[in-house]
Length: 581
Image (tube, rainbow, N blue to C red; front, top):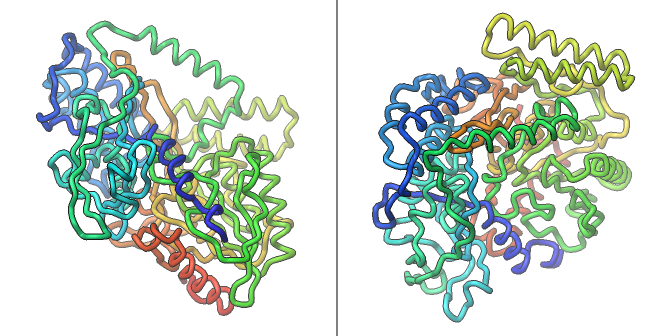
């Protein structure tokens, strides 16, 4: 395939421009960038009230509490030391940063706290980790012309403002939590050169007008120093001592009005990374990150209404289909589902096997994820279960769903399944258990029938450490049912559904909370974890491990990566070899 079918320089710049709106960073304890605190601050009592409010939202709704205590040694309920630190903070931004640290201690990719700020800053290039090093992977030449800044994609960032890159990565960890170390480090690297105060409260304080960066040029091996101005946009936030509950209440009322016109269960079926953590190049992008072989014939991906990138090509005497699923939150679910169904029907007639790419997929709707899965399942299969934090909010959502199903004339079996789930939730709530057992969040049953129109030939699924949430779920369902050879790197391990709450009055913060745990068909054993069926933190481990994150792949549109993929795919197609037993 020609270069235009993969992100070219202009495409990378567009991706960078989009990404820079969301990346963030903060290092408030480095006094070199400090400036005086705002003249007025929240009182110690107001800070404590906000901190306890955030803790209360998590205490009531956070589903994986016992799991985090067991595998991450973090007790969400041990609030005493945190409250002392909150009261001891010297200004509002320091306090807001402490709230970030508390939520980040969950080591949960879904959960974060964010604040009402429009302030962002960018240096004009992005970085990620390739071969264990922080490399430049996109440059805006309109900001940084080659004549003045002669570094290129693939060069290594050594230091920023006099501090080694590794030091920054460690300091940025709490702003980049992504359920496992590899994913977290990548997100931290993405934040080195672009910052947003919405999730990094101290960003304006620690960001100078001009930064000094040291970059090792691959062409010569020399380390060059550059002074690069930050592009700063927006106004830094300031809380102050005046209560702002009225504004928060208004925003909550607006959210409630929006909820009334949606599916009653829609808010309970979100399995997606927050936008603020979709910060690597091409996260959720429709085109693949790698070049496809010569002779590739594209089917979808040229029109703005195409939800997927797809096509066919020949390799090793086989005709292979290819489709990329960029996310599980399409602009129009009905249109996307119809497109996927039509592609499966075409591939069934015209290919010997299918490669499905969900690398850098941030997730989305549980229901839509299950729907696409079903179109790859010709035989009966088992879905993922969810252990739900059975709060009154969940009961109310299912009660509304039952009423909605009855009033809309839904079949009796659908009403009965919703009633069954309501009963499970009510029992767990009544018995004051932390969670339910594993239940379906869609039609009430974990056991699904096969789909006559589904693709029935061999499937190869591509995943990586940025396949998250719904991306975790999709991979788990295919692997659990022996339906695909999973190739790539371990998925992120964002294993639950998430709900956003208006969390505080004085700082006007919102917090995303994981309220359930994805549970797989059977327990599995992986290093560093007890035997478990949970996806949270564990992720989905590939059958064949192939790493895209190398400098060679960065500079050659992933051609070495896809060559390895094809080798594993053809072996699997011809012999069935490669799948975990």
